[in-house]
Amino acid sequence: MRNVDHFADRGVEIPEELYPKTVTLKDNVRIPDYYPKGLAIVSADFRRVLDQFDAGKHQYVPVEIKLADGAPYTYGPNFFFNCRQILNVVVPEGLYCPVEPDYLPEHLWPVILSPLRDFSMFKDKMNGAGLWEEIRADSSTFVSDAFIAAAKEAGLTGCETDGPFPEV
Figure 1 (cartoon, rainbow, N blue to C red):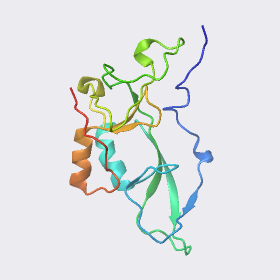
Figure 2: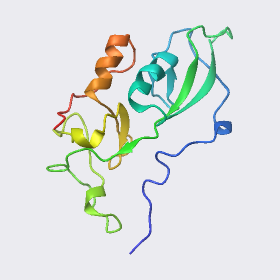
Figure 3: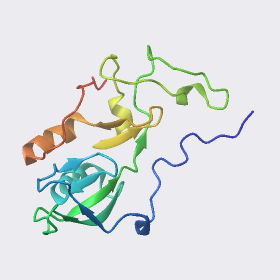
Figure 4: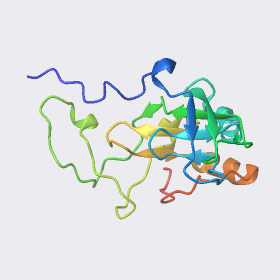
């Protein structure tokens, strides 16, 4: 038996001093409300909509954004976003598990998720969540149908998804 915590770094608060204070864009463009490349950056509008579902469940760190020419970015405030909500909602039947780790119970075995695979989610395990990471799938961020509807209604950009995946 090995004592390995595959999920130790997921869902934890990152000390604010580890984040950069400013970000300079390569081009003078407007970034989407949800920009998940590298350190995810979100707008205040994104935060407002997500907090309708997940208030207090994620980490937002203020960031000053500058344009490539050094001018201030006028679409703010903006925040680095750290998803801290980790859920186990994917229905496991029929999913591919690349390994069967002897150090994890079967209900936590990692699975391969992609838009090319059919899978569904347990709606009752979502508990009204708006955005989360799936515990058994690294780098998989999910949003509920309700959050997507609210994001569209608010005109948020950058919230495109693969799916939808059935909520059962």
